[in-house]
Length: 82
Image (cartoon, rainbow, N blue to C red; front, side, top):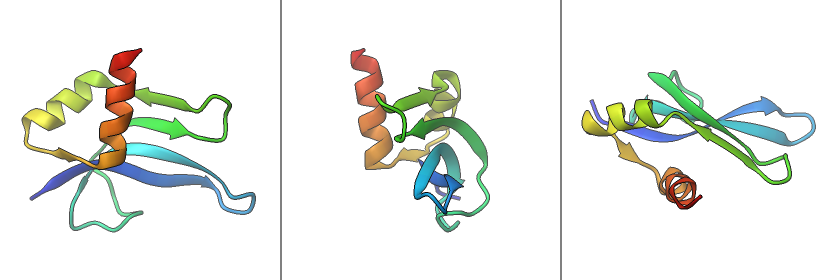
């Protein structure tokens, strides 16, 4: 089973104000499919945008062979800078 670490939409649809979960999910699952574990969240509606990520859970999944999406890679890179 290939595992990806990527964003999953959540939040309100009516106001177009989405939040995103950072999740470990099977590659076969759809965008809103069942995730294996939630690793953090991203809230672009707040100024500045809020990114929260559990580094220990991320490292655990990377050691198991999970691949990060490009967006999550950029979040991790920016979190390491600050």
